[in-house]
Image 1 (cartoon, rainbow, N blue to C red):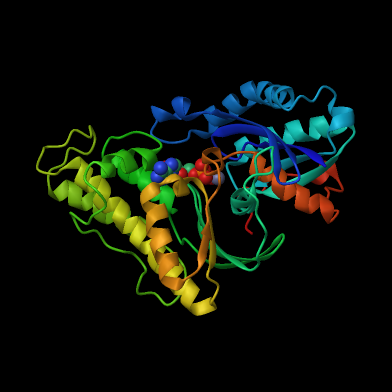
Image 2 (cartoon, helix red, strand yellow):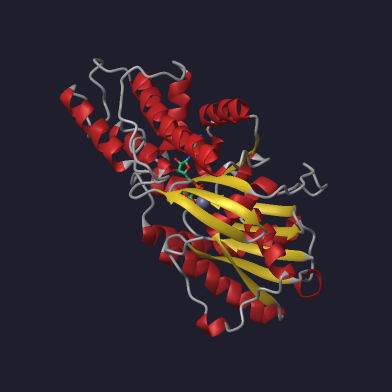
Length: 350
Ligand code: KG4
Ligand code: ZN
């Protein structure tokens, strides 16, 4: 079963052709350079960039997968319908509807966060890595817009245990980087700086919510604490031009450590409370090697197992993960019945 999948939920225009769990072609057109100078994603610019690039991205994907006639070689079309940026989601949905009519196919809609869960189970065109599903899993999702702890009970079946009540983990890293004048997206820059000094708590920032009884997260207080710390120490926030009293590498490392400690604390709590030791981790922040190391240590302590997205492109936004979810939905006959009623759902939850 071949699926042409599209994701335009935020700032990557992405398409993929998948066959079961295998990716035959994957194209991602990143908008980072467009948004970088604004310090974050600008919705109107994102919309325009998606509109300008989507045809090219789809054409490239079909070409790479050697599909000459989608009418005969593609079985279904899939698209992300939420959560995400409304004006960005709209572009992908409109294009998907257009293709569905043109190629006379059925449409499957996919939740973007569901995609990040399945990103751990995507295979290359040769079927590697080999993966057997061993339900249930505990899933930690850490992206720019979401931080969630979910029980992945069985295919397409989830129970949300906790989520952020304000900023997401990636968003916290992005905001801290912005305060330091490091540009967007902040996560990778913070990681690079932290590498130079190692993962340590040079300046101590709060670990939010670790005393709370639930499995929710909160990162906005940490961001505020960081802001006042910089201000108190005379850091030139607007220009990002440090006054040398504070060391930027140590700041990056300490902030990152506060975010990751909080994540680890809650995953540890969830494992103890619900007894599931098989973890999967998805979302852009999982690209971070410090975080991966911390998670591996935790899992070792519990004698459990952990899966990360097997290829680098699967950590960030991509359409391959959407195609793989769509495959499991197609097997269950979950198609869009009425195209006219299909709309984007920016706040869609699992
Ligand atoms: O999943 P994703 O690509 O997009 C959303 O669905 O939001 O996640 C983007 C987030 C951004 O906040 C970015 O700073 C973060 O992932 N990120 C990282 C790294 N690479 C991307 N955070 C920490 N370390 C990284 N290496
Ligand atoms: Zn994402």
